[in-house]
Image (cartoon, rainbow, N blue to C red; front, side, top):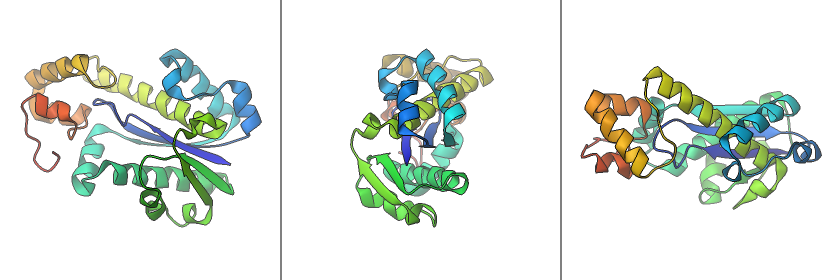
Length: 209
């Protein structure tokens, strides 16, 4: 059995990450995997390393620049998510065949079903809300969040700027400082421009908003 989940969907800064994990439910449960939203960043990073060591893992990470390009083309977050989920699953199935895939439902089930490629379309796909209660999806949640945290930190180092997680006042303030430093061109390299945060900054993003 394999699980699918994503991280970064609600974070203005940083990438969108989808992880696919195939492994033993018993082994993953013994590791202590859980919905990454319930774990500290430190615990999430530690658990992700253990999941990588005990299961087959595939990650698709879409950095802000590519994300903005894809969103401008697809004009729909759920279609973008489905595209990433389908590719993570296809890559996983190439190295670890499974019969059943469980995914945390993020839209009408047909959105993901229609995005599946040849191998993904050949397996039994179950989509359900709050499916992180199942070990394989919890493991995917942990791996995706750890990858997001790692890439967000690397992005911050690249631009010598601390990029806060999530959305809200700290993110708005960081966005204002980045706009002052490098304008929309800089923001495009670190943020998901279709978020309302961009509008709060008084910036138009043609083709994205």
